[in-house]
Image 1 (cartoon, rainbow, N blue to C red):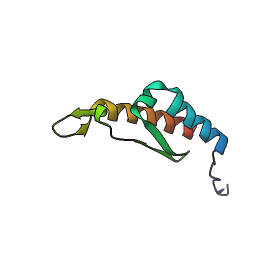
Image 2 (spheres, rainbow, N blue to C red):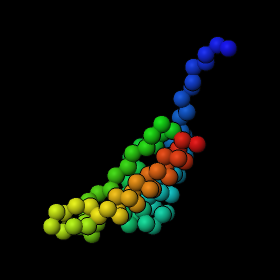
Image 3 (tube, rainbow, N blue to C red):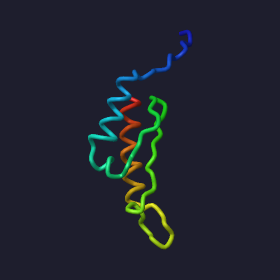
Length: 85
């Protein structure tokens, strides 16, 4: 059987914008965290959370709270799975 080249899947701009709106604006917890999705492709996603004083977990070291990190990773994991399927 001959090898066929795989055509990469490209997500439509409307899909990406709708997805972004749901995750950043409609999911209140993500909005509270300040989660921003910076790129979405079936191959990978990236996002960010801006550091704010109310997200600090250890005031002496000014570090982001571990719960904020894990919640951000959980949300982005969901984005990655949905983008991949």
